[in-house]
Image 1 (cartoon, one colour):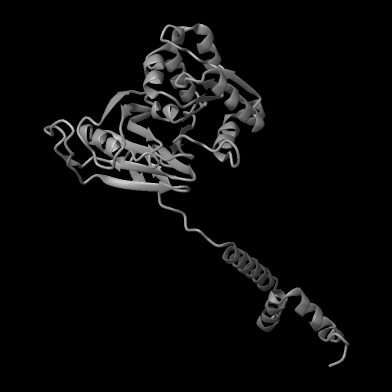
Image 2 (tube, rainbow, N blue to C red):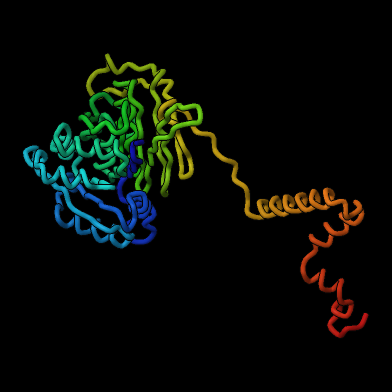
Length: 337
């Protein structure tokens, strides 16, 4: 069985008007047959945040929603909580304190159950803190700023659902370019992924015709997903002094708006499909129908080229023109020429 999709939401997803990201999560989880587990461990609101997402998911058609809220590592070993995750078709991790989320569930049976659910095909989604923990490494905390500086942030362990990566959220809105660049400068084996608010990076496992397997990231939502690929970086991170600006040269930058896709396995952009306007598409479809009709007529041998040309011209005329040609009196309002 292929791993299920990941939905990495940059926080502040629309909950009132266009709930497209949350609706997509419910649909992918099974709609009316969905069994969704909400993990609010990162949040200080507890039951309140569960009530919000319970109402939202049910409004979008989810059949069953439960809360799984370990508050310490001991509770994250509770077999009853693990059993709820074992039965889930979708798991949603809320926002809040990402270091709290990581320190409570990473390396516990609850954390292992999330990974196992992903591997058996369940949808794993998370917003804000729940997004960051999906990568192999995660931002523990740190300040904003566009310039990477030594020690401006710290890193903790994530669940590893997206391997060899680090995910940051509220990316553009809170100016988190510098801290993500700092991390990839210190750990160039990691792919840096920054997700804007009300935006989701959807990661799906794809098997190509040649048998090769790829992890494809697609973007939905209002903002963008920013990717830093430091594979060939030149940096002074290993010798820079405390809080000094870092050298980060030759980092490959990808800014991906909605509709873009990126191959995480090869670290390359998936070519965009050319957009065709609706009027052009209609004309192409009509031309295709005309060609098929001509081919049938020629094969039947029942019409000369001149007849075919007249038929084609008649077909392309507007309905009112055709009617006027059939009834000359219709050519004028009073029926006279």
